[in-house]
Length: 411
Ligand code: PLP
Image (tube, rainbow, N blue to C red):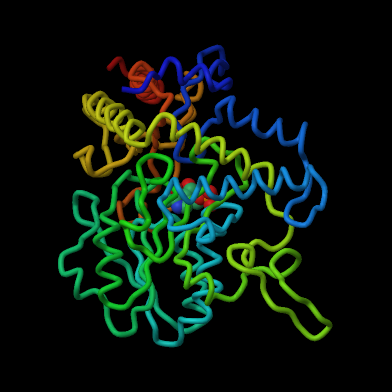
């Protein structure tokens, strides 16, 4: 059991009031809050060893380089990557996926080839592939949804054909919370000689991820959704792939030797980290990983399952609520998307805000999925380690207040 009261003390922002009410932060799928330990790591870097990395011959540069590379090693261990060289730092999940679509994709996808996605993609794992397909004359196909809003994997072995080159999928849907069986999907892709990329933006912060057990080729996620700062993303890739792939951006740091005629590339992973990286935020991300490790990812997951179940149960008591995603908490992460019959999700979000409750309302960067569900958007509450059942109660009361306000009823 998490000691949530103790955890909450580490998050200064949780003490603030919004419109005179205590903040109830339930927009963790968009970005998480940051503990004091992460903020302190940032301040410590800027106050005591701020310097550029990898090329300095002075003490500060060496300390900064060591801290930056230690953070990479911690990220590798966190997802059980075989070595730190398999970890490339990017700006976010979006950039990590674009890196793959641009470098691996441009070299390996040709006219008539196919890229396989799912109907629940975030735009981050959709647009890069659509652009690649348009440029190359390839096609994009989608694995559909069942009525329970899990992926329809009937006949999975038949979805691949000789022209399928890449299968990319979300580990956990940001809009519905559905957890996808990525081990099974990546395994099936491998059996058919198809590459796999897992968008782990909503999984790495919330559950134990083992990229070797999943056996995918690429795995992408963002620091800011897992207690770390904004501006840092992670691309895990199999070593051989990173070695084969051409660089993404060109400039300093990613080169070995440069002449007026051309250049050769640095070793991995630095070949993919052109220019001065986001040193401070990567180092502070290391502190976020330490924080999560100290709690334990199994504990994080157990807490979120409990709170999600409670939220589904309490919201489910409202007669005119529509809840999305699978009902079985084993099959879903800490995301609860809902609509209240005739209310617009933005209206719900606005009233909730006045009660101090921060949620997300809209299409959640999944417009095709919303169309597939037949809605323009949903209201979405998403939980993390510092959320409590009492906060769920505040959410439910605020939803009731929204119904009352817009309908002028007394329910
Ligand atoms: N993929 C999923 C499933 C997400 O939920 C998000 C962000 O909400 C992203 C990708 C994009 O993450 P970022 O904005 O950090 O690039």
